[in-house]
Length: 435
Ligand code: LLP
Image: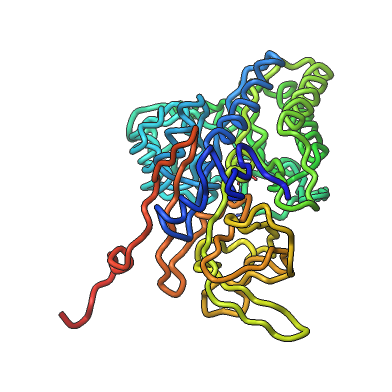
């Protein structure tokens, strides 16, 4: 059994996180319940920041809030001195309501609406990561209207696509995001920005993928971008103040995953950037990164109550829980794998192999296949590990299941940070045709 962060087994044989017995959490808040280990999030945030400090490199670590967006997590990231990457008006609205320092908010997205760009300008956020020509022209026009200057990064696609264990090089990357670095799109975007009175071009951004276990892709991306910058410096004197190398650092979901420590990504990226800028005699830019999963992923655990069981002799044993693809769509969507234990029988030996079914009316709603567990009965509490990123964030009301509650645990205390949706909440948007 692999336990993350502050998780341990207490004297009652129950899973404890942040010094709080998870079976007590299930009783107090009900299930399904997302539990976040705050100390582990702080440790991850500090790990990234301290690596940059140790290496003496000016940096911003921006939390990619799409991984889990809420007032509480934004406030926690602010406490840790992180910046914030938002990708929609909704995420920006949440950041504003959380009173997140606006100058440390970065706005992403491949199709920001005029209304979203207006929001960014009106809140005077730190920077807009411009993704395409439509946005570049629209933002310039709006900044002129407001008579302001907006700091921007130009998002480029360096022609590298990274996947969990490998990466592919594509001459002309087939991606909906960013300006292509190899043809003249990125160069044109840089030139337009430099000419603009209302845009202050800070530098370039790239993001090569998610759940990446190797540093090769990041190094290749940095090399390609810096090579291009050297050409731009020679031909029109452009040198970026900032280089944002995105997020995507992989984490451990199951024993098949062997991620390198988060600090290694940063160390190797920096080494590559330093080598390249030296090679072309450029000045060292400020380095920004935007991890999501690696900040919150393994800090999240979902608690479920086991309900029904179906044994198909010689075929499979199904155990059904009180949630499923409505609170965690990743197994159904990506075939994502998770590990889990019985929180109330955490010390007991494995007794059988079962498959964990969700409660949605859909055969594909299976959370975990072939999970070894102690003998499980109704009302046992199943704890699924590593659900902190893209779990709650992608939850939905399929089958009109209310979204779960979320609690933060730290130093023996729990705090409700998202209340459970009620049936009334589910009708919030409904308008009957007969009153
Ligand atoms: N920056 C940009 C521009 C991104 O598009 C993303 C993720 C990140 C940063 C953060 O990446 P991370 O460090 O979390 O890997 N729903 C999928 C993941 C989608 C990632 C989208 N972009 C999942 O559940 O695996």
